[in-house]
Image 1 (cartoon, rainbow, N blue to C red):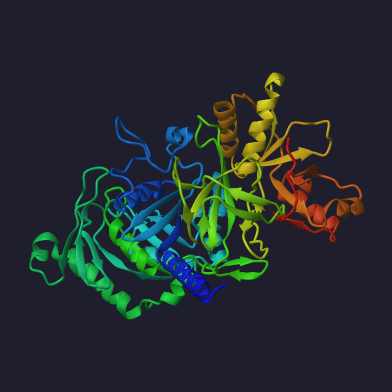
Image 2 (cartoon, rainbow, N blue to C red):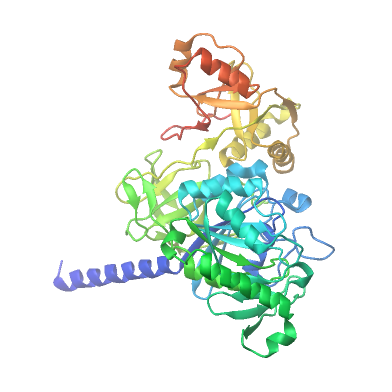
Length: 552
């Protein structure tokens, strides 16, 4: 090789690394977590509106000709007015590329949310100003804490009667043990809500209702502007300033390192429904949020700036396009540059795979992309080769941390009343199991071929039946089982054999042929553990590597 060629390749490598560095610096990736009805889907729509990704925001419960929301694309979501499945929405905002991971708020779909949080670098915790912290928010916060994800808090519905802002902050600090730093502070609430004071600039942003679905008009004034007295009542402004002085004196100090460690949350007040406070939140989030972070693998932390491509599958979805009956794998890019038609290694199987027709995801809509960078989420065609938690890479073999299955609490036999439709029934059950929409268990008696649906909540079972009929043309019947607790046996079948006969539980196998014990209640579980103290059980399914799951 000539010296000229060597210099040319060196320059190309430098340019390539520079492009990767810039791409990572310009990306933000986050998930929104909340309790149902806190306004999560509405906030998602308004972030898209301010990001210029849509021209008019939709309403969760459409009225007349009002447009439907972008993130709730599944027909059942539109009918019920709830988010059932997580979606990915990528959009540009002032030279930044934002990957917004919209998650289901309903507790029956929390496992889908747990998987999505595995792909997030930041989280936005949404609170209803009237209700404060709610059970599902607390659960999802704990998942974020385990992963040390930076959390940003948006206190919503300030235009409705709510609790005192200082109380809401104290609740977060005392119950979640999370320090707070309000970025803005409300002037009044409910019918007396007049706007917010930016704590950093001491400017006032005045509240005004926008036309439904449009961007709010934002009036910004300095605190010393004489117009303020004409627009805001003296007592409301004085109270807000007194509370701000108290925060400055006795509150937490701003610390970017604590934010990135997930120990301090910046707090914002606003109203997503009326569009107030969304744009300032988005601007501040871009300043404070962490860029794509290193991910844990069997080789240690994988830096997003390393040149070799790597990523992992955190979600599978069938039939996003009902006309084509497609199956899509959601891949979170972790390092290097992804390129269309590149060949990668599949860590679980050891096979080489060419990734053609990668897709940029925006709810149900997709477009072919040529490249992607750390923090991005892309859709890959999935002809059945991918499972949740799979790692794809180039260069030295690596494997990211797996994504565990959590213990279900509701169990039902799924019967197929029409034997002539068994082929479609089997296809539907297998694809929904691949997605993680439901856990599938099987009787140890192989003559009993009907699957057992294992779910966190009843709504999951209803969704499976709905999707089997609407997407696969198969009717089904559920027969509830009288169990409420599931535990995996550490040590597998050999441990059970050594144990001998066990009572007050049912032994089944999961999709990887591992033994699972079903109990009617915690008392039965504790009784077994007392009788067999040597037995080790787990509420979380062990992560599987290198093994293909069982199909129906």
